[in-house]
Length: 321
Ligand code: COA
Image (cartoon, rainbow, N blue to C red):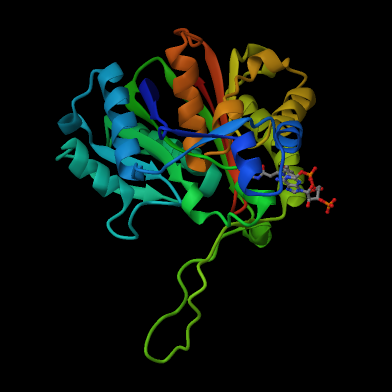
């Protein structure tokens, strides 16, 4: 049995913030951001909650899949920026969608989150325990940014993407690879709430994302091609067999480096980095929906999905569309 993606959806916040907009509120420039990352603008949530964005993305995915919310066995949401610590985003989505028969829980693997959620869904489907699973990745990262740290805040954006996965005899996920290296966790970090009880003298500082950009860059360009090649080998395929590589959108230079290392032309690496920036767990499902809605995916195509990020974590899957 395979796990087939049979519907996708995405939703971005209304507010578009360009590099020029940012250069009015901090010491940066369109030239610096564009040339170092490929990012020109990003969507930032002003009015929207993550639950609203994820619910709208999910409704679109369910509609394309022809699956009713009550037919879902499971909802898996990947996020590091849920609206609430409790309940989790998946349970909020269950309520919003009326998915009364689903079991719902979140997965946090940062920018690899959607890959890990999709691979978890695959295992539930392969084991026969589930038939139809909604997999969501989304973030409102802008609330975790230090807007005085120009080296980090310009890179990220907000949004959510969703995919409906169902059991299928023929099409779907062929192989997956996942990994983590907790020893390098400090390279991309956001502290949680501090200990707070009557016996602790606490600081009121809010924790924000901090990053060693060059460390993360080196990790990504080394690990992603390796993970993709491993996943392809498991599926008995080569890079030449792949029609499209849907990669986590962190930096166009990382994608160019992967394309060079795999000796695959950049045309096979679609990107929405220009308009979206890095949406962490939302990045892969939003790009997948982008290529799906533009008719770039055809039945039987071989697709590679790959993510990487904080943890450090990484994951890649090969599937037949
Ligand atoms: N605008 C203008 N200047 C900036 C800036 C900004 N937004 N951010 C940093 N700078 C400055 C730095 O202060 C530094 O100045 P200095 O040389 O006077 O000290 C200079 O630009 C160079 O910074 P550096 O860090 O060497 O740039 P870089 O070429 O390594 O690019 C990143 C920085 C963050 C774009 C790059 O390291 C990267 O993309 N890393 C991967 C990050 C990533 O993808 N993370 C998410 C993974 S899921």
